[in-house]
Each structure stands twice: as structure tokens, then as C-alpha cells.
Image (cartoon, rainbow, N blue to C red; front, side):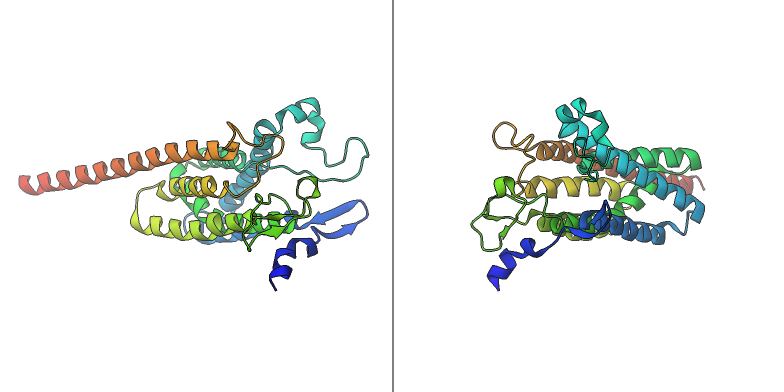
Length: 290
């Protein structure tokens, strides 16, 4: 049973089906499933204060922001020198030498996050809505989709972990140089912590803190902290590897976002408390005057 478990990735075909030159990969399928599940949950959350047309407009902005932001983020942060020399490869799904279909691979989470924020900003400006209210709704729906996205990484045999001697390690055929050594299934770690666990954290935050932006900021901080920890088990991107000999680019960005997010959360919480204090004081003064 243990041997079957450790060799599980070898038995998973990353391609769902092939039709002519087109191949559908598990990652792409899970990505679409992630968008569908998150979109359905988002509609359930916003249908009481957004029209269906507004919801479709928001969804379009989010999907566009994710696709453009995550791709641009990957190009700039993880493989800039390659794409600077071959800019056509940024959005061209065919191999530049063989003309074979290879799809578009390489996405940056934080690039996608930036794209989502820009998409929300354009949406709220157009419809004259609260940025933080919309951001809270979107953030609460993200962990559902993120879970499926990381499962897609696992099925695709990518973003595997570092070498380990632990019995729960797995063999990944796509590992560098085809090495057959046990590695952390870091995709599953991320699916669990950054998807399932983070969802319960947001449920707690939503019930405990009532100021607008609490869920959105908590999501950014929670994800970054979990990412900071899981990255110690994940194999870094080969074109960057480790920075300063021990830390990854993802961890540096996660640390920066965590610090900024925590400070913003505290500021928003104090701002809400101050508003409530002024309202209570104003109410008390009115009673005295009466």
C-alpha cells in the first residue's frame, strides 16, 4: 500500500485527452473547475446586493485580471530573461522551433492577485460600489478555487516538493534530471493549508471582525503566511532557485505581503473602532442635551 502511494504520480497521465494537435491537461481542466466553483460561490454571496449583469461584469474583470496578471507576473518575476529574448512565447501556445502545441504554462499567484485587485478597482469605479465590500466577497470565494488549482498542479506532476526521507514523500517523474527520489507532495500541502484551512480562518475572521476589508486583508495575510511555510518543502523554480542561498522569491514576496497586510488590518480595525467610539459618544451627548 505504501509503495502504491509513493508511486501514485507515475500512474497519473497529465493529459485528459488529445484531439489532433490539441491536448487538454488536467491542470487546465482543474483551473476551469476552480473558476467555476469560485464563481458559483461568489454569486451566492453577492446576489443579494448585485444584479446578475453586475455579477457577470465582475466575473469577467476577475478572470481577465487573473489571466493577464498571473502571466505577466510570471514573466517579470520568474523568467524575464527568457521572455525578453522571445517575447512571442509569452502568449504563443506553439513551440517556436517545432510549431507543436505546448500550451501556455507559467503563472504567478501574486501577479494574479495584483490583476484581481485591478479588476475589482475598475469594476467598483464603473458601478460606484465599495471596493472593500467587493474585495471581501471575492476573497471569501477564492480558497474554493485555489484548492482545485493545486490539485491540478499535482495531477500535472508539477510544482513538486524538495527531496525528503519521510514515508509520505512521493516519486515525481517530471523532477529535474529524472531523479527517482522521494519528494514532498507540496501541491497537496498547499491545497490543504492555502485552500481548506484558510477557508476556515476566513469564516472565523468574518464572524469576529465586522469592518469592511477584514476578510480580503486576512486572506492576503493568511495565504502569504501559509505560502511562507510551505515553500520550505517546495522545490524552487530552477531558473531562480534559492536567493541568498536559503530563501525563495515566493517567500520574500509572501513576507512583504504579510507585513503590509497585518499593518493594514490593524489600521482598518482601529479606524472602525474609532468610528464606533465617535458614534457612541455623539449618541451620549445627544441624550445629555435632551
